Length: 368
Image 1: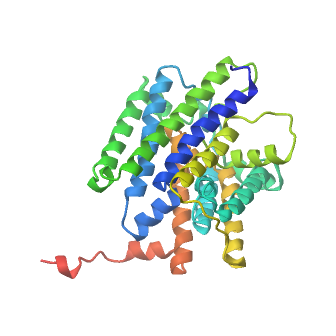
Image 2: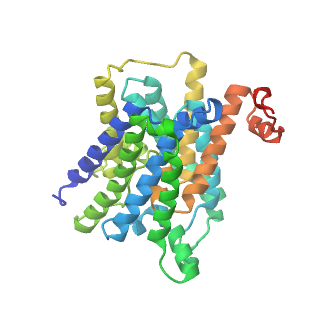
Image 3: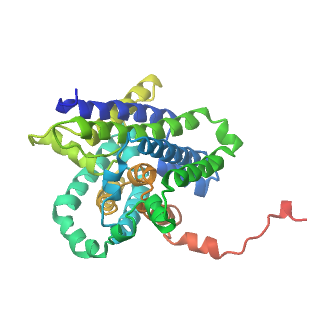
């Protein structure tokens, strides 16, 4: 089984289909979660996303402790840490995400329901990612961002667990992960309204476990297959570009797990949309909307490569390995998204600064 080059991609396709189905059914979307949290005061979508991240963290670290997932070979933990890329790339990705209204993962889920705007976004994102990885914008990355990378191998590497373990003299990676996960799950489930939201709760758990499964599957193939296998779990920037390459060119290489999971998410989302009678063709309303989506796709594709991941790649997959890049990138993505929303909704990308400076006054109805 492991010698068949197609089995790795098919495994990714199966896991991706589960993720896509769950995401479409529950409207799982990072951008929508942030927007509803900031503008509607509804944090249930954000808790669903956090549930996925903390579930992936606990499951992945347990698999790693059991020797099933070799996350130490993940590129998220490979030196050096792209410090400038994590921050600048994260800001670019977040801004692009706001312009589009979703990320690469969300675009795949939307495309499964017939949204042609998402097809435009995915095409632009994939091409921009290829250019940032091995094309014209890769020169920009090499000249401006790569020199600011930091090699942490002397102090324990990019894993927060390894850094803390080295500092105190013994391995605390698993206890640290379990305590972090437990604290995160406590925050997630302390909301009664979220506990009652069955679809979002199930989606968070399913997506988190699926990411952990990806680490185990690729680790197993890497150990058994007679060809090189990248240890990965799920990301939706470079794999989108690589999927485009597989479609339009004969490279001589079979699809890998990352391409499989991209195709699987699309299939799973389409099945969910079909079952829910939620399939309909949608397109851009005018040239202005099209240009906004193209710009957002470029920013996400380029920023995602600079930051080595997206909202799922860094926010869930890298977080599950305790990579210190994960919080850096996610804070940057959130900041970029907030600036983008401020520009679109309020006409000022820095409107949130005014909110912070404004004195906190108690509403008249609650004053005593």
